[in-house]
Length: 269
Image 1 (cartoon, helix red, strand yellow):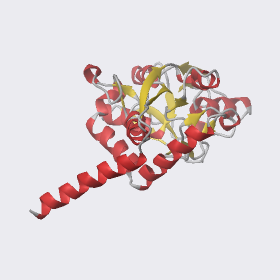
Image 2: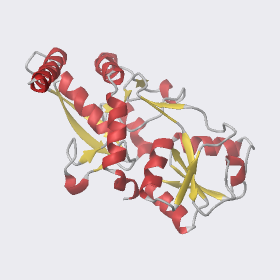
Image 3: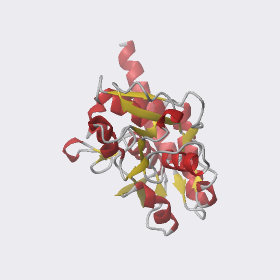
């Protein structure tokens, strides 16, 4: 009986919370979310097209879906290449970006970011039988892959431009999966990608891949944020209010652990 009473109280609390945070004017807005759905576990196309929002699922999709409930808005997902998301936002083709986008000073000059909701960093992915590469310095003269216009791409490019290291070649991909497959086949020596994404690939290819951070701190700390148009300060404030509460409740970490546990196979799709 105590369990039934507790369950009833929890359900009541969730409903009450949603009611308090929903718009009460009776009108539902529709917002277009820009993403790049090839970045497990944050955004991907769900099995059989049964996603959280349309055919899309992942940490960002579930997080946005929860925020949309509280704000009483509908979400339309626009899936495109990551490198074009900022321009699409500036041109008002989308209303906001939720795409595991790292908050950087350069990006913050053209968009407004929410509060950080996930801490990440860059990992190097190599084949498990590759014992020669254990740091970014070991990639001197080797072939390395990155996803175009990501912070991994920026770091690798800056490292070469500043003379820190000279790679044999830098291969840029619109999605990380083809690059990781090239590592598996031996076409690339390494692939640099966000740490949580690298963990997903390793979990889906046990015994085939090895992942690690640069031991000398070549890659700095990173945090993800959702991005909004500079003029949409009111909408940003609405998202921040709900997002801050969800972070405090541990909802983002719960989503990350859930997708890593239940949907790891998508890392290799």
